[in-house]
Image (cartoon, rainbow, N blue to C red):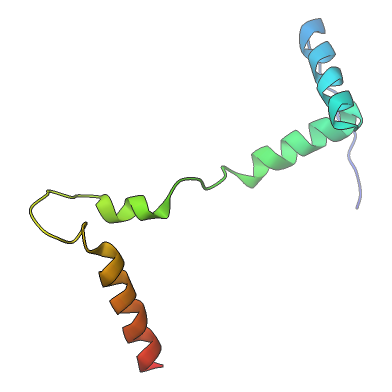
Length: 83
């Protein structure tokens, strides 16, 4: 992999804190910055509980939210049978 040299300017406090963080991780300052850039470019991590999707739009007027596990199991079983 071809590397491209980059120069940045930090204030003294940022530089000291970044060096300390890199040292805590046991890596060089350059590697610390490379990891930060890779992490940022990868985009946001997907977090949260996927079960929360079943409660979207719940008006309280039906049993869909209460029986979501049974409905999901029924749908999965149906798909498996059709294969």
